[in-house]
Picture 1 (tube, rainbow, N blue to C red):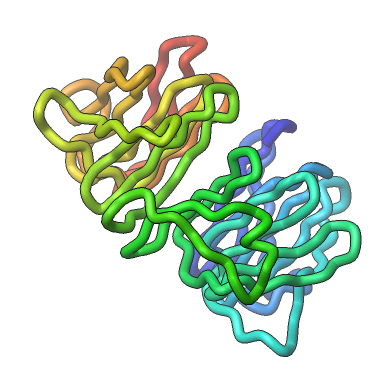
Picture 2 (tube, helix red, strand yellow):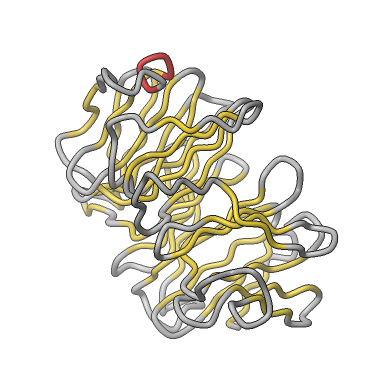
Length: 272
């Protein structure tokens, strides 16, 4: 985060906060959290953190004193795994089975007829989303209508992730059929020559789309062109990558067995 802390979610051991390489552990034995299976973590505008769990619960962690508070509870709804948390000026949006939209000013919760969103991103007045079998977009005005929210399908199939570049109006999708850019209603498939690039995870930072690929290592793509490609031939120990996150000058990626970090300022890579 902005203060140099590293945040890691785990499936069975709770949430790890690593400030300056000192480990602080938060779980059900030392906090108000009811379980240790965390699935998403997101820093909100206030600087606090929202963390989601396998059973759909959400907690806010105060950045100053690390106090933990359950948030966005609703006994009338049944939730499942928190897959994605995003924030706009007026709303929090959480994919946890049904899509849950929380109005910041009033705390009112809306439940439009969308479920099982793997990822989502906002550009302008439109929400772009990825489901296992559908990729599309829906306007906010339709989305806030809980009964009649109609969407436009962008691609034939579904996928895993979407990233948005607000500066250029471009979007990037990691789909079942490959990795694509999308701008002004037109899509372009990102390839290495004639070979498709299948992504497990994508992350956009400073105009570069970083791709954790299924079997070909890590790609960095700018203006639809490959500018970086790391494999077991030049820095990685294996080519099946699971997750990637880029922020500032750093890129962090993980494979089945290793965690990798690269700092572009110093042009250095490190296996952790």
